[in-house]
Length: 224
Image (cartoon, rainbow, N blue to C red):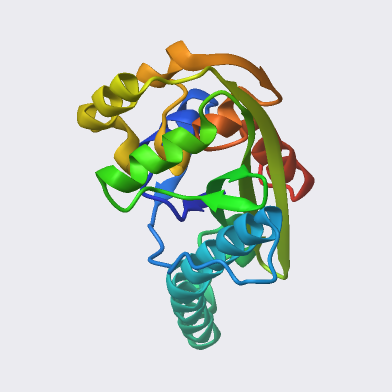
């Protein structure tokens, strides 16, 4: 089985490694623009689907087709010389049923507003003021794509933030930690001191609901 992760996120990679899931990385370059009619959940799920599909179409599927052509060439050679033919085995690299693409996208929802990664320091400070002293939702869309199937789901965790002072916001933004994080904070980093309570999957807030991913892999025969 080959699992291709459509993400360059070191946090997602670390979570998969810690869970003992083997994978290769093929980041997907997808524009993350929310459509006006989309709920936060629909937006996260669409982004995850687009990432997984892009990697499946550009890397996994094309690689599978290339290997299939090689296999057919080997079969042709076997017809000419039966002694050279080798039986195909289930799970052979050109078997598309043994290849999967995994896409994920994490957003922070405050009411109906979606907070992705901040554009700059001012945007990070704005996001931190929005989550300060209130509960918000962290939503990760997950999509698993394989031969003849596409499974899209999402996980939501509620995070309760303490009230932040302006000096705390300024200092945190200057640390650089918020700049590549949805909602402008990392629950596993400096911001952990301001998290008063979470309801749901902690790993989901870090960037990937590992339990959900494992269930999806098992349901589609990609994990034992």
